[in-house]
Length: 375
Ligand SMILES: *Cc1c(COP(=O)(O)O)cnc(C)c1O
Image (cartoon, rainbow, N blue to C red):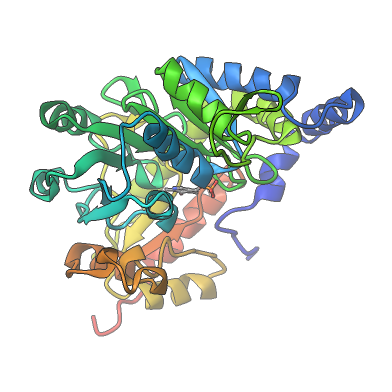
């Protein structure tokens, strides 16, 4: 049996090979390689696609998030030491963006079923220094934005969305990245909308905030040779913008295929010891960036699947609060049993445009033949 890859970007991007080469050639021949027509066009197209008023391209997803914090600090909305509520099981980038700006991440346990922040625990985590709730749509599943924005409004907090894993997902009839005061997207190659290198963007309806992010990503300059802020350098690359313009019109179709694969897994996998990801209220609420199952003997399941020729990955083996980077900080404090259990049990099955229906069935069959140790 041919080995089934968890993800195969070469195959995915080969589907648009000629168009991608044409886009690259367009940039090559333009002679303009930084902040040119492609970046402006992609920003306009992505904003329109997502239903956001403004989009500002950045060097990557981590910087997109950091630039929002930085802009809010320039606006006096945030000050060093202010607290930001984040889900404890998110990818570490969400938390690094907070701590890099000298804000304090306050970790809240997720729900084991949806992998998203446990709404019921948010209120207890709010203190006099809390300023922002960060919603992360982890694995492509939308966080409960109706309830999160309601608490934020009631408590006078801002909401930021980390949309790095959820391009195109719709929560309660509304696109992710349009619910919060601002959102950060990543176009890292593996994401639902991926470039052929690093890339990211901020979306917001707040034009003043967008203008600040735009200046901050470019040395803090709004006008050549005039530096209004102590900015950074994190611009969306011109070549990546051109490539993203080729990839963007395919995202809907690709997300639909991801939903189809998820549905196949959900109907075909039937194992007493393998828990499937929870279904969402509407199928659009999941962009299925990853299809993540849980198993008490995850490593044994992963070894069994490898023996069956099925490659799987773990997103993520170690929770951020247990990483050495945060060992001597408040992030490391406290016990987080739900987060620990998730990181011990999760396994990501193959997901993406590279899979055929036959391969999806083979993966499901391989899961079903797993002999649970001791069972
Ligand atoms: C990928 C990712 C990021 C960071 O994006 P980069 O483009 O890799 O910097 C942030 N948050 C989450 C949840 C991610 O998955």
